[in-house]
Image (cartoon, rainbow, N blue to C red; front, side, top):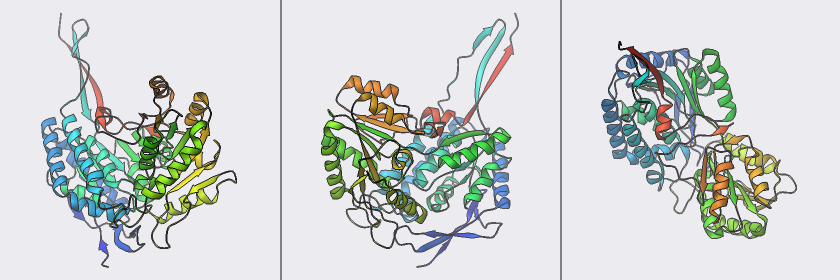
Length: 478
């Protein structure tokens, strides 16, 4: 198999890296090398920020209508090349190819179109005389140059979540994709360059050091990352030293609270789908389930059977595959380590093993008999492992649900409307789903509390995060 050599995308074109060093891209389904990407260094990052700064002089002055039209055209071009995007995304991630266009590529297209509309829907207080003889009004302006880092679990989706609102608001960007999944992001930059001035969107590849250098650079006025809690804390510390604005979307450990009046078959089906989708590599995944004592055993048995039949893993182009491999060798080792360290009181009802000896495949796993302070309850596994705890009443369920450091997403499954509303109020998470789990729409915000970070993606709130607010007051005379 030929090995493709990637290049950075700076100033509207592909360019060779100015520093030595390259990373092998490993196919997670076969463990074969299929490409190499530059390990960008200081010279590459300087060049990207120089291109972005030059572009901001004009892009920052464009009208909302101009920015909207550019985003609509990018969305149309992405839709026209959806199969190509899906091929690249599947190659990088190992995701099942058959459903990728519908599940993710067209979702990104829709999100681009949402932010195209948001570009012309800036909000602010009405102009008025809040002091005699003085008229005040609000300007919402682009922040300027922004540095962004995206993860490997949803490479294209997360790039769009970062790029679309920032560009819609008139900003310019330097973005680094994950070291294991750069292909679709580079294609996005290539497609966008047909409709954006050179330098508005720049993509540099590299490793953790590249990402750190990009976010620590003195040029950007804002930095944004989707990644681990550890990475988010490091970014926040570094940004504080230069008073950069920060946008953090970090880890999650979503509680899925199932009461004894829930529709068990519907809950099992929905939770399995939301727990094993993308091999559980989702900060909002339904992988921490709390089940009321009266239905606990029935639920565990039904979940294990449903997953055994429906949550099949395999290579991207195999028929009947629900999820592919985990993305990389380190992640496989992390999932395996959690299972190896399970306490004696844990019961593996399904799976718990690597599948095959080539590729990073892990069987759909269900683990019950767990305690609130167990490692697998408190830490993010980020794999196809669903844990189940048994609770007695609402008070215990709420205590355990909130008893983690994360605060991104949650769900409650019950037919009792009052109970659902109580949990919607008291669950300490940025999203609460009721009798469903994981649907996301562009119009609603995504973002968490506590160690899950701060700032919002998607929605008008996500758009506003990429703007700054200026008060203008004019003396108008007596």
